[in-house]
Length: 150
Image 1 (spheres, rainbow, N blue to C red):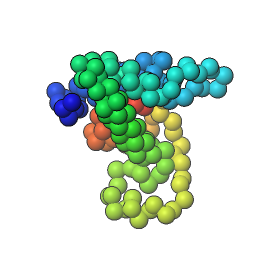
Image 2: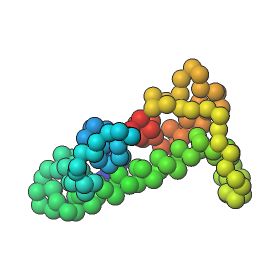
Image 3: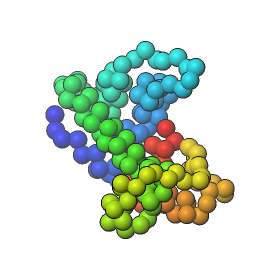
Image 4: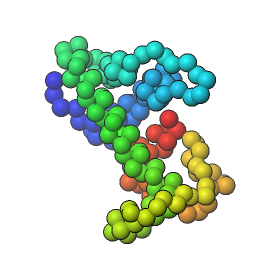
């Protein structure tokens, strides 16, 4: 099985992966349920197999485990990057400042922001500094809004 070039064609494979992750059954199994919801009963690895087969049917037929592992790894990469960027919206000191300042402030206690950005992103009620943070995050990590909605 050849390497998967996720970034080819303007990241088209990542966008397709995000579409699969957004499917309610996949999202519920991978992201967990809300209070009072029932689980799907599917194991996470099964969801990664389904997604791998949907995205790469020819390769999945040859090497299902390899494709499953690659889909899982890319999903974990997306989630890790989302979490890193989301923290900038949750805690002061994580904004558009100098990266050296961020490193110097890592030992300070977290001070949480006084705004909330819902799943649809910033709106008219979102403060300008939060909109600026969002725009900066989106420039650095184009997948952020889709992951935020999940």
